[in-house]
Length: 281
Image (tube, rainbow, N blue to C red):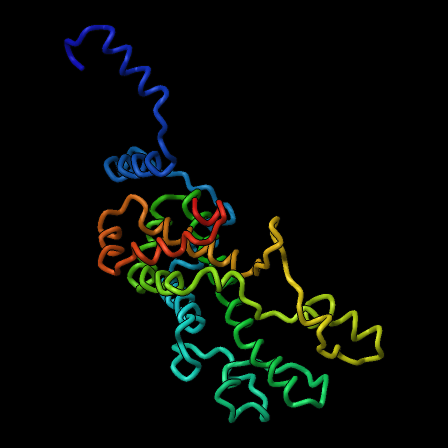
C-alpha cells in the first residue's frame, strides 16, 4: 500500500469496511495475538452455559463422540441386529421374543391383545421405529453441539469435528445417505394408535385397555401440500445428517478429498430426489 495513489487507498478502505469477516476468523486472529504476547495480553473467557459444558466434556470428549457414532452405527440401515456394534435393546427383550431373529433387537410393549400376529407386527414395526428415534436424537445432539461450539469459539468447534472425522463419521454419514432416501422419508414404521397421547388417552377412557389395531387407526401420518405422505421424524434426521456433513467438510480441502475417495457424488445426487428446500440447501 506504500506510495500508491489516494484513490486506491480509499478503495481498499471501502473494501475492508464492507468485507464480511466471520466470527471464527476474528477468534483465530485473537488467539494468535494471545499466543504471541503471552505476558502482556490475557484472554477473558466468558463463563456461559456452552463454555461450562465444554469444560465438562473436554476430558472425555473423544469417548463421547465415539459413543454417539456407535449409536448411529447400531441404527444404520444395512446393519442386522446380530452384527450391531452397539445393541441398545439387548437388555430389554421379553422372554417371548428372545429367541426370534426378527424381534431380537426390539423393545417390549405391554400385551394389549392375545393375537400373536398383532403382537409380532407391533414389535416388528417398533424395531425400525426405535432405530429412527435413535438417529433423530443422535443427529440432533451432534448438530446442536457443533452449532453452539462454533458460536462459542472456533477452535472448540474444530476440535469436535476432528474427533468426528477420526471416528469415521464421514463414511458413516454417507452410509445413511446411500439408502433410498425417498423411501426413508416416507417410511411407515409408526402406529398412530400407540403414539402419545393417543395410547394413554385410550387406556384411560376404556378402563385400562390398550387400543386394538384395525384399518381405521393403523394408517395415519403427516401429509404435505400435495397430499403425499411423509415421516417428519426421518425428514428431520435427514436434514440433520446432511448439515453435519456440510459442517465437517466446509472449507476443508482434505475432507473434501475424502468425499471423493468414498465416491459421495452419486450418493448426494440421489439424495436430491427429496424435494425439500431445507434438505437440498
